[in-house]
Each structure stands twice: as C-alpha cells, then as structure tokens.
Length: 273
Image 1 (cartoon, rainbow, N blue to C red):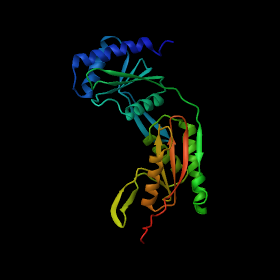
Image 2 (tube, rainbow, N blue to C red):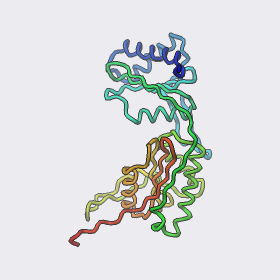
Image 3 (cartoon, rainbow, N blue to C red):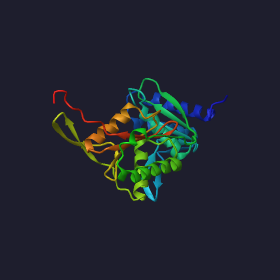
Image 4 (cartoon, helix red, strand yellow):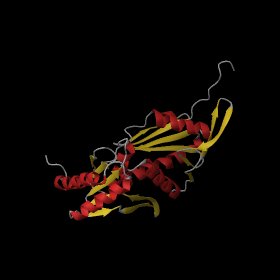
C-alpha cells in the first residue's frame, strides 16, 4: 500500500536532509528553518512558513496556533533541533496542528542530532467516545453542589462534542473555562493552594487546575491513554490544599473523553495522637 503523499514527502525529506547537511550540526532551530524554506523555494515546493490560525469559542479567542510550515497546503511540518531527541510534547504539538488545520499528515523533524530524524504523523478525526465514573462522589457530594456538578458535566460534554479529541490540555482547559463562564459559572484559572508538611505550613503555590465556582477542582489532561494515578493523585492533592470535598479529573484522551469524580483524601492521623 502506498504511503500517504509519498512523492511529496520524498521531496520534503530531500530538502530536510540537504538543509541539515549544508548548515551542519549544532545550530539553533531557526537556522534549519530558514535553510529548509530556501531549499523548498528553489525546488518549487509550495511552502507556507509559520502560518497562524485562531481557535475561538463563544466569540472569544481561546488559542493562536502557529506551525513551522505547511507544504502543498496538505502536510504540516514541525521542525525541532533537540539533541536529546523527541519528547511526547513534540508529538502532541504536531497532532494539535493537524487537528486545527484538518490536515491528514504531519512530519515531525529533528535537526538536533548527527542525522536528521523524520517521523510521519498521520491524523484523522475519531468518533467521540465518552467514559464516565462517579462512584466515589455519590456519598461525598453535598446536596448544594449537585446542580453545579451537573452543569460542569454538561460543559465538558459540550466541548467534547464541539471540538472532539486531539488538542493539548491547556487548550481544553481554556475551552472549558469559556464554556462554563458562558453558563454563568465563575472559573479561576490561576488559583493558589496551601501546601503543608505535617503541622508545618509551607506556603501557597499555584494549582494546575481550574477552580469552578470556588467549590470544585477540575484537573484537565489530554492525549493520555487513561486517567491514571498521577492525575487522580494531583486532583486529590489540590482538593486537600484548597480544603474542598470533591473534584473532577477530565482527560480528552487518545481514544475517549474520560470524566472521573474524585473525593478529597482523608486526613492522616498520627498513631500516637
């Protein structure tokens, strides 16, 4: 079976290798960007350099995307100069660009080593699958919080149905903040929680979560397989730091939108106390 855009990617790879060979090893990323653009221009390859686009929701700007290059208006290129090789965030970034521009193929490129490394990244929109788990919340949710939790759930599902899967966590967090605010729920994106060690107050630190209505902590992740121990532990730590009873862990994951209720951990009691 022929590869998607096989002839075009062959030409792009030649330009990528030529740019690296001519510039040499060890230069900053921008040097390879420029060399690659010059090579494409000389070979007649249509290339948009650093195109930008805006993601909006409810009339508000949520995020501005800028990929490194777009060839033939079909292939997204993300160019790196990373001596240590690719990290997961590089792949997630490329997937977000493919999703936003609705392109079927990306090339993730690393100029930062002795040889150029090119990774093909295909993309296609997937049907939305929703997985929900609220067992832990049933006995812990105060009655007055139930309407807010239902409203938060509606907002999460609305974002999932409108935008699908494929963006990064920060984009989904901003989308949710806009959606919940549209529904009349106050949202704080820069809350601070108090960290403690035994009886010692360590001070206040930023919380990597949304605080909805000053009552519910919502930890957002994306492009993960599942909501795992880290996401659950983080949500519980923030509940303890903010002295709140319940929260939500939400993952706009690789294959499903997952929502899980989380209960604040019990306070530890010294055996001798």
